[in-house]
Image 1 (cartoon, rainbow, N blue to C red):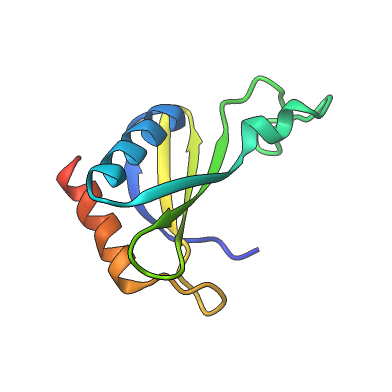
Image 2: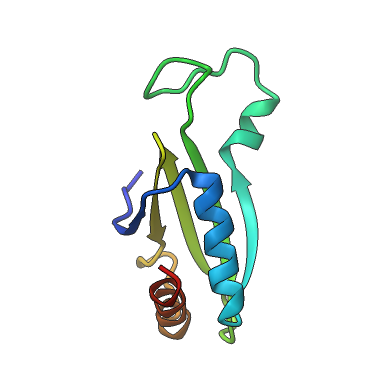
Length: 114
């Protein structure tokens, strides 16, 4: 799997960063749909230790969001959280290209609300 470059690091736990992110994007006319939540995915599994920390009591989190603007296709944002810190990545590669207008709208919304 290719790693995605982080474009923003937030000094907040992932759940707080998610709330802030959704509010920031919504204020700028963008709609957000959560498509994956690692904590929810792990609920149905027994003995599912974190591959990084080898414990069930880990605070690692990954959330995948689709961000809709005026473009036909959404942009995909990935939040990865650990130890009270959250990193945001925007998927923008040859397989899934992020619309430039949505990308700029996301960046502007986050800058305005930092």
